[in-house]
Image (cartoon, rainbow, N blue to C red; front, side, top):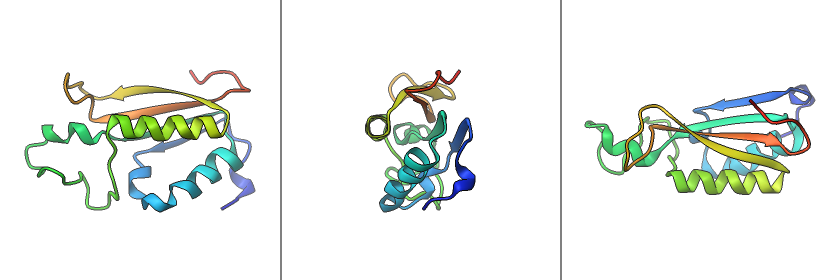
Length: 122
């Protein structure tokens, strides 16, 4: 999917979005955002599946929302983001969002992508 109206922006934010996509559509999202729109800075947040043990009403293996197609562990999210960054000339760094559980991390994880040919996202 290409849309010229999405080009030329400094930043794009996908806040709690990717987990609502079918996994087989992630490649299309990646292409549209990182190969075509090419913003200088991209923020992507998604639930940390490891943290789900801290939700008393959430059964083991269940997702936080009925519309979530998947939820990634910290390692899975970092692997995805690192590979996307490498394919599209971005650097990526990771941040925790929310109260940190020493064993399971934070409830939400954030990837901050910066186009390597541009100044860093602050």
